[in-house]
Image (cartoon, rainbow over all chains, first blue to last red; front, side):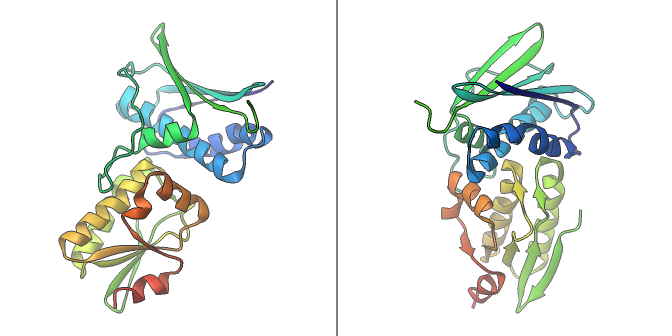
Length: 139
Length: 111
């Protein structure tokens, strides 16, 4: 099993973490055999999930901890995002398409398009969002 | 942030940055709105340099479209990469915008 982990501090005005996702987490998707377009979709989904942490869990407060662990298991590519912000309201959004001319509401659509399996838990004040996608060619 | 902007045949042509994401979307949205409102409402947004766009970035172009249409104009998109196209397709925004392969065609389409 391949694993990698990144951690960084929330900063609503900084995009350095985008590079971390690209350089450290996406190679797992490449190694798993996902094509370029799927990898782009996974990248976007991870960006949206981190955006949600920064905007909603941390309410745009800079300097708060975010960690993402990626692993490529026998059955799926999985990323676990952890933060110490506000709990995520449940149920998780369905990712239903936004109205065509709606200004927002597309983040969860992008997340669920990249990762069909999404689960959330909170333990000891830590939010953990797990995003999974079956490996290509898997049953 | 400063969006690259010029006028061509009465059409405002605006180039979006390499990354249009939450961190810069607010500024880009305000600047695009200002450009549109100062012009005729006929706008071409060139996405040729844009490699990454998140949902906040999409909101920038949707807001621009709404501003243009309030002025009885329109906002055309041009030169998007295959990956950005896939994002528009996923979010069904490809049905909302007129999308052109190249900037010149997007300008000409205004007549």
